[in-house]
Image 1 (cartoon, rainbow, N blue to C red):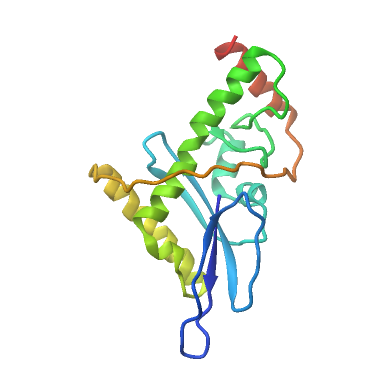
Image 2: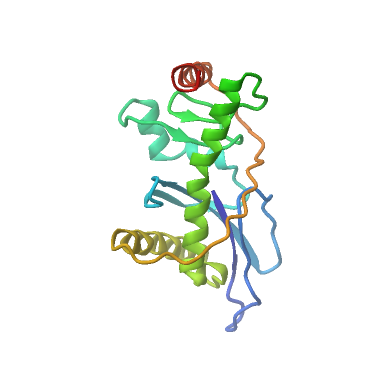
Length: 200
């Protein structure tokens, strides 16, 4: 998830600088500005396959996911595959999260592989913000900010498909995100099956 603070145009002039940050930080609200949260799903090539761009910054990542068409489709079996999420998400059979306290070497290997693989979404957010500097300085209405973010995601994919050189980006990863929903029993079972099948 990505949070962006967006300045509201005030009385015919633009407000001061707008900062953007990764969702691991709690949403803050400043006078004359607001936060938005953007959910993205990407593949190993950092191509974006899904964007949810409409939520206020105060909404928890997992609540956004549970309200998304992707969650509904995955939970009803309409899509196949598995997503990786951070600790802030409830473990589901289609959304694997890291173990909070890995004990065995297999569990530690799973967490290592999970974190290494999940780093691609953080890299994708970093590439997006590096490629489109406007995402650091949005001074538009919330609806327009959501449209701008979605348009930047589309242009990012076009650049990726045309193999344009991505900008250099340093990934600052802080994935501590407290869960608000408990793990699903089937999700924990699916995670344990993945660990037993691929990491033992």
